[in-house]
Length: 259
Image (cartoon, rainbow, N blue to C red; front, side, top):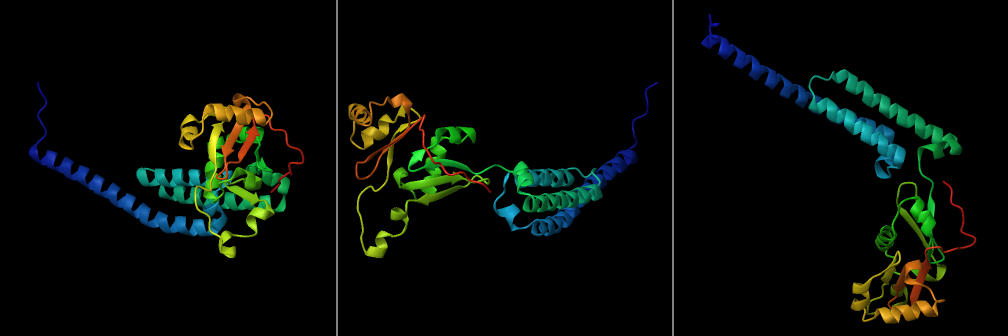
């Protein structure tokens, strides 16, 4: 014998139950969003401006875990809401504890972040240091431009900080006086064009500035019979000055940088 199909009333009841479950889950998600956002704001203010504005590596991980916990709570109504609240508070307290440890003990603090790294000194790129922190020549050039630095030989010292930002100290003669201060204005392309990047000749840029590879090879020969493959960076300034950093650039007296 075949089982009798569900009655019409039974089907309607099941649909109503399903709709109620969907509505209840939706209301639960809305409630969690409404309660989580003020809690996130309070915890963010408690953790401090430093965590939100700079994001060193440990703080980045804290924010990453924080977001994962909150996201899981909002997306899955079956997760106990109180567990999420406890986890958020625990994360904030742990972050605060680590900050206090870093402030009281410098050696312990270094375990939770990166060391500042010197990437340029006296106008030269430090390839080994850049390789150690996995920064390319393009990364540093972009960061210099963001600092309004368009001539590499103007840079006395450049440091990639623990938060990944670039700090730049120009030579005193380049930073103490602006043209506007002397009512001097200069026309033309007052910026540096890279012609060799990590051993690769930038043919398009050479052509753009009206130079040839033969001219470039001649400049390398004048600089000490240098091969293009051994050049980490070479550029031409707006005044036609040729600047160069070798891959095995050996610079003495590079200052140590600590937190």
